[in-house]
Every structure is written in C-alpha cells, then in structure tokens.
Length: 260
Length: 312
Image (cartoon, rainbow over all chains, first blue to last red; front, side, top):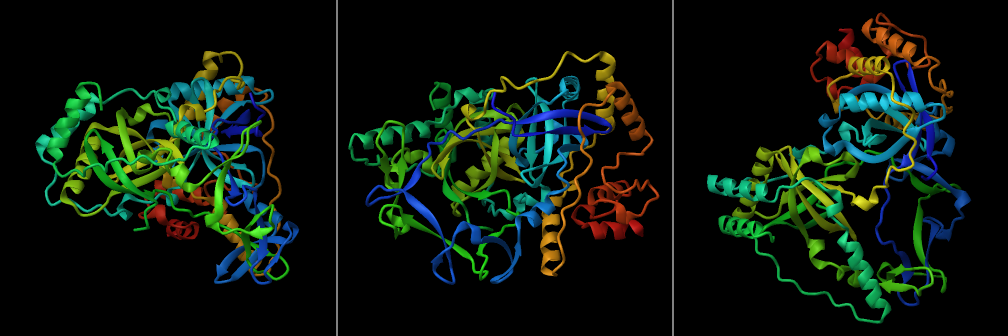
C-alpha cells in the first residue's frame, strides 16, 4: 500500500482515533502533453507581465484577489494559510447521520482511512460501530491548507472519508429551465417505459463497465504510429422521439430478445 | 440559466432525447490571480515552442503521447474526435439500477440535464423519463465522453429534473488491500458504548447546517489586509495526539456529557456554557440553537443574523 498522505486523529466526544489518510482513487485517462504541431517539440508555459510584455520569473509572482476591476489585494502564502484554521491534525466529528440520507450530489472526493499509530483498538471499534449503525460521522478537517466538510463511514471493513460539498454550492433544480410538454406522457407510455426499465434492471456491478474510450484512444494512437490516416466514421444521426410509443415498443422488443 | 457545458442526446432503447448538460455545482471558491509583484499587473500565460523559442497560437498545438521506448505520437483534435464519435454525442443508457446500490465512492461530479428545443415529442420523452425514474426510485446507468474522457454516469431525478452524476470506472478505485484496518474485535461492552455515543450524537442529515468556514475566513483575511491590518495565523490548536488512555472511560464520560447537554467545546476559548454570550458561538452552534428554537428562515441567515434572531 502506498504511503499515507496525512496523519491525524478522528475526535468524537472525548474519544480519539489515530488514523492515516490514503488515496483511494486515481484517474486512468490517457494523458497527453502539449506539443507544437509544426515540429512536435514540447510547449512551454511562460509567465508574462501583461503591462510590461516581459517574461516574469516565478519568484516575482504574487497572488492577488480581485476586489474591483483591476484592483487586487495581494496576499502572501502565510496570510492565505492563516485562513486554513488552526492546523491541528484532527478530524472533528460534530454529528453522525444516516449514510443513506446524504444525497449523491454532495459527495466530492474519497480517501481511505487506515489505523494510525497505537490506533488499532479505537479504529476497529469505530469501524464496527459505524458498520452496525449504518451511520457516517460528519466533521471537518484541514488538508493542504484548506478546510473540508467530510463524512467518515465504514465500507467493506475499511473506514473511508468523503469530502462533501456545501449546501450553497449546489445549484437548485429550479435554476434549470425545463419546458413542460403540451400533453404529458400517457398511461400506456408510462406503463411501457416502466416495463422497459424493469427488463433492463440489474444490480450495480462496477466491473461490468470498462472505459471503452480509453481503449479507442489507444487504438487511434497505434494507427497513427503506423502512419495511417485517421478518418472519422460517419454515423447516421439518431431520430428524435417523434413517435414515443413506437420507439418504446420497439425498444422493449429489443430488450426482451436480449439485445439493445 | 447558465450556458450549457455540453449538448447531445440521451438514448435508451430506441428513444432518443436531445439534452444539454449543466453543472449542478457553482464555484464559490475564492480565486486568486497571479500578479507581477513589482507592478501588480496580472500575469498572462503564453505558450512557447521550446525548440524555436517562439510563441505558438492555440490552433498549432497538438496532443503528444509518449510511451517508454517508443517514438512520440502526435494527435490533432480531429484524430481524438475520431476515436469514438458516437460517445461524444450520446449518453447511451445500458441498464437501470437502484440508486442505493451505487457506492458513493464512485461519484465524481453532479450535473443536470435539460431538454433541448421545444419539440413536443422530446419534451414528452424527457417528462416520461423523469416520471418513471421517480416512481420506480431507479436510476439509469450509461456512458458518454465529456472533454476527452469517458465517464460512467448515473441519471436520476432531483428537483423534478434529470440529474446526471459522472462516476469513476472500477479500475480507477484503488483496492483497499494493505490498509491497516485495526486490531481485534472489540469487547461487546465497548461496542455497545460506542454505538450509544454515536446514536446520542446522531442528527438528521441537514446540509444547511454546515457553512464553508474556510471561505468565510479567507474573505475575512482579504478584508483585513485591504484595510491594512496585520494578518497573524491562529495558534496551533490542541493536538489530539494518540488514543485515549482508557477507551471505556472516554466513551462513558462522552455519553454523560452529551446527556447532560454539556457538549464538547472545540474552541480555544473558555467554555461558555448555555448561559454564555451568543457572540462566543460559531455559526454552526448558533444554527443548532436556532433549530431548537425553530427560528424561521434560519438556513439562509448569517452568523450575525442568527445572533440577532436568537437574542430576541
């Protein structure tokens, strides 16, 4: 297992649980770097002063917060860090909630928590108690000079920490325009769609879904390496749902035959 | 309504609905610009060819792929677009699952989908999907490519709209193997006491209860700096250190404190107790009191407004 990226203590009530934070996710996207198409050489990002039109060494770059058009308040690193909190290595759990009550929209990043030094007993106790109650501890912790709202819960015998979004960051659905149709879906359409959903209903098995685009991009890279020309395949545009009932019926037929 | 991030269609079976994608998260982070320290002018990033030492326009930049022992392969935007043309335009629904079945570990970024255009058939198909997903409490599982990355997505209903959440693929979640999962099974008395303490500290999930204190402190630091005041970092708080010397004792004492309403003061100040001044309480603590007192409109109140409402 990789090294831990943070060590600290979960605190709830007068109880303390030493823990280590580990990365739980990683991107597997095919990564590229910017190159100049003319000569395939590497692109460099250089910093320029917009006033002097001269390159600026990194040492002369400062951070500014724009309070008005072109008026900035300059803060140094320590001043920004002063907002991070007291820097104590703690996850302060304020409450416990039902994990199932947290809407998916709030979950941001996920980390694993392992037992910290001398923390074997308390870790196991918290893990078992969270498993038993189906609850998550909601708390705050400071990581990389920034405070996060977090949920700590048990998952397959391991404690995981999710960072959570704040309520005011969530866009309410009412801000998204959705015009109503002149006539709502009819009873037959609803029944048919329900049957289609039942037919295609399955348990969620994440292993059933592979990133096919990753493979497709690697295939394009392979062809390009051989000097092939890449031409996109033309695909017929899909019909819009003019005849909803006919489309549902045909889909259901297809789904029953096991195809799509 | 903000501009959409992507437009395409959502397709299940032979039903095809043109939709636009909107972020369900607004960026409230405090952003800093890079400035030139000498004259305070904003820094611009310019792209240069490392070989020619000349600035390169955006159109002349390609995607270089390097593998050990292999030559560099350069792809254009067009080459990339040819990789999976359908996937970049269509959210293909492959199955329907129960939302509760999906582990939150997979969730990435939330969005909304809105129907595109006024065509009656499309609006009806959108409505139908909302209605049926809502009544069955299920979510559609599909895939599509957004900004040159494929995502597994969950489409469900939220606020009477289709809400889409991008998810990680299974191989983007690291195995938990090797994580130290602690010691031996706890004694029953300990587990019972811990469970009791957790239940005593349990509340309904209410996201309005939590404010981004970091953002507030950062804005406060900026304001003080603007006024020319000195910024000092707060003293480091009590280090929580190791495990409690006696677990059972810590659990019991905690439970007693919760039951007596004494609570746990996390601040550096002296304990204020119930009779203490409101000005010593954090916004969260004030909110909790406002909830008990059933103060109307409390969720949108600032710390000062809560203080005022509670002192009435």
